[in-house]
Image (cartoon, rainbow, N blue to C red; front, top):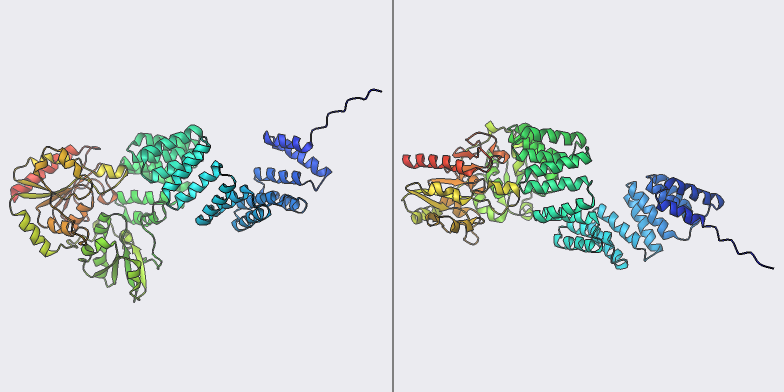
Length: 598
């Protein structure tokens, strides 16, 4: 008797459901999972995948119910706790999510996914050192996981360990060259480091992988703006907004490009659009404040300018004391926290004596090298560390130095402009007068800001060659006040032999600017770009010509040739972007008139 061949086994219903699930046919997959559970309500795998599908559909609460049901029947508890942790993460229940990931690891000590999820959660919670340790554990179990390397690198970047972060992103990219987040995050770090051309290439690579990633277009625009490629920067912001019309940060970036072009009204319109979408966005509020300040509307600008404390590159760290808002403070002292650049400190330290004259005990918290110069302020003490502040037992309130005009309700026409408010050492002044001698019309020159990066810093710099018109004037002596960048330009100009290079601010321990201040007192005029030298000259009440780019910093306002901050300063603005030659034609004429009257 011939036996009939056996019929092929029917395909496993679970495998059929999984195949549909993998193909993205979620509705059909759910029907198959439900059918399995109707036959066997304790089927652990079907319960697990129903929960997975619920989470994929955004039904987190329903998914949690299914997982809790599965935990009562299934032997594979590690993966269930891991999934439960992901559901609680999506519901922003971080504490419960962390507990679930730790339960998953306790059930399965070799469960790399649970370590990775725990690490990502710890990073989101700001527990970065713990997150690093968790990523290290995950990578011990799966050393070639590109996403773990990428996410670990992001934690390192947040910790400021940028070299290690870049190495981590490079490792992730080596393992998985198509991992767009690694390219994007690497570009962000390069941008923060000022390695702009490399950052641009990394954003371009990101967009080759994900052309519709609006954030990459927007950040690419930031880099292009810093490179001075403003039309391209605007195009990148426009592209980001075409992809995501609700992308508030892209409106800010586009507004910043308009600001750089001097189109403040257009900039304001974009900042308003950003705030309509995210009313509390610090970058939008801060940028709008800068635009108001540049337009001379200080009452509107300074309250928004205070948002600088909340932006990504905040210029100071808040002190752990109550902030002063202008209220009476009997028995307390006021600490003004110096911030941002040296020129900012010199410009705004005037508010120390101004407030002290109104009966407030005022201390400036500044860097140690600035103490000797700032100690010449009337009625103000200077501290250089929080420990020094704490040595005085009186309670205190504090204020960022550049917020003082806002607290005082100042406008451009009410700036306290009494000068000088800083002083040079008389003995040093006499020493410089002897060394320089009486001959000639002595002009101190400064053509480049200190170490800086980005478009704003570069456009303030003046090519030293522009000073040729001054060197050609009879009887003029050019005396360099440059101490850091730009010195290499001297050898490249035909009038290099006309530039005197005194050794200033080089005495160990003397402090910043003490020699420069004394030298300025022995000069007839200072001609400078927008840098700390301009502020020092103004604070000392020295005659100073300040050459400004077409779109200057907010403090110089718009159009006017006088300066509300410094009565002895005259402003020479570019009439066309980048045109220093025309500016120095006017400066040379003004110098000639001054020297003739001497």
